[in-house]
Length: 211
Image (cartoon, rainbow, N blue to C red; front, side):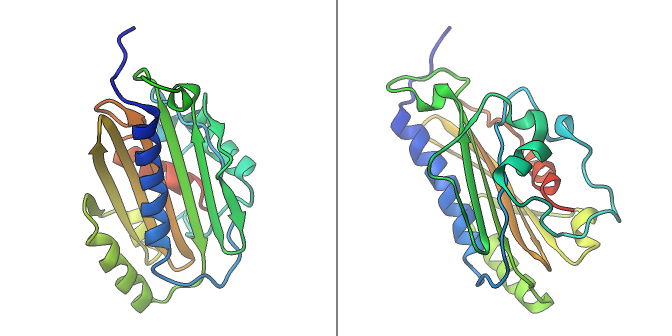
């Protein structure tokens, strides 16, 4: 199998960048409520829709539906097949950060195109309309981020964003959702030109962690 000339360092840098981005966006507001954790092991052949039914318009409340990384992994289903929860994952009051990667992403030296990692971040708190607008404007100004219209989120007073980026032969896609109940984000990183999830699949996956 042909390998991609991408080192562990490059994968680590971009995966860390996904964590930094989602934490940066989550850090735009303070955290007063308890946050929960989500766990997952994504696969490039999987999609958000393969793990469960995406929230239909009118069904979503925008609240975090999971309390542990294990519960989030169950919610994400086959999206996370083949990945292991990483030691840097944390579950703290008001915050969630879970990272998963497969063996190819963790190998030293050159890695094959199957190298993948996923990061999920949540910050649970009550946000009023003015705060949602202010924070969303900051998110929208981030390089690579595009705001998308999604009735599932708009109907509950929230806003949704998708992200695409690349660096050193590694591709990243992700989504961020801001609701009156907090901020939630999921990023997928993979070696090569294609991330494990498309931005729209990352958005659907993020919503699988909500109720």
